[in-house]
Length: 401
Image 1 (cartoon, rainbow, N blue to C red):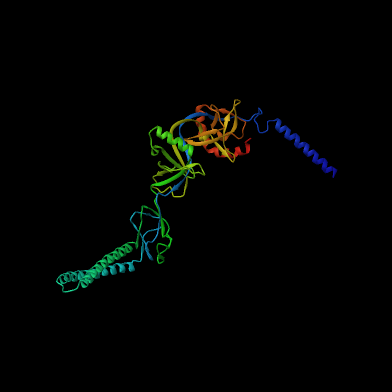
Image 2: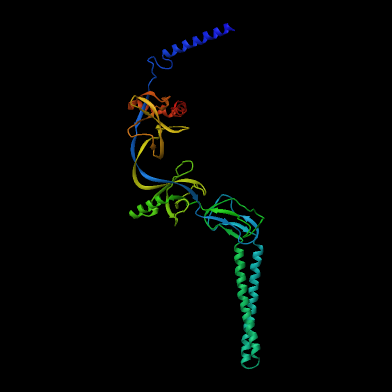
């Protein structure tokens, strides 16, 4: 047992001297005891003028949102569209079995003919009765009876015409038309089922082009906006409005602000506003959340850096700056909006600092020495940097301080 312990002690001592010799000889460093300097190119943090904007969370809302229902009861006989297709205003969408309504029209026409005949006869009888009463051949009461019958038949004709109008109206309502242009949804009640005014929605029709986007603006923002517009003699519609989709993709078409509500919400302290956007490709669909960007038409100075200079890990975005000793140091930053190929930096950098833009894949850890390349060398770094940037993100996670 003692012999084994002695052997283990000897092995530990040997490993200690081997490690010490390795470190004294430079280990992972070069012969001079220093890490080799990485060749990089840099850009200085500077200011840039951009158009001031305000951003708000918005929701897409259909300009028209119509629930299609049957106006007359009956059996749903046919649907004339495919679910999800675009339909035009006035297009026939559904047909309710018209048989009993056609019969009602025919009956009403027959009743009108009968009423007309009865009225004509009573009017002739009244004319004759008038001559007879004037010559005392009949009594005044008999004449009054003829007069009352004529009036009754006249009223019956008016009633028959009203019945015909209603019968024609009901017959027309067996065809259900699209009230607006738009996209029709799924069919909720299929052919052969009984439908009617109280039997539910057959389908929903929404207009998609143009389309609304509503968003809530803090009361202070709205007041400043109105004062600015009044001072410049401009209208709400003169301000440019853009969107980004929920995944950050810019919507390609501009909109116009065309409405603001008539009171501030007591609970949120915001005012609802609305912009209208062209939507020919149906990219915007009702219910979607979007980011509304309102352009204030004034220039502001902001700190910007190239997007290519930024890296990101689980803790957020960061860059590498070159310090006064020529070492690459990691700095955490908070960025705002994008402007072209740059990020607006809200926090973390000072004007004039030099950030590494090319050669980032060579920075294995903070504190690494770097050499700033001349312009010709910097061009050569661009291609290699684009392929190595992703690898640098992974390496930085393990080497950040």
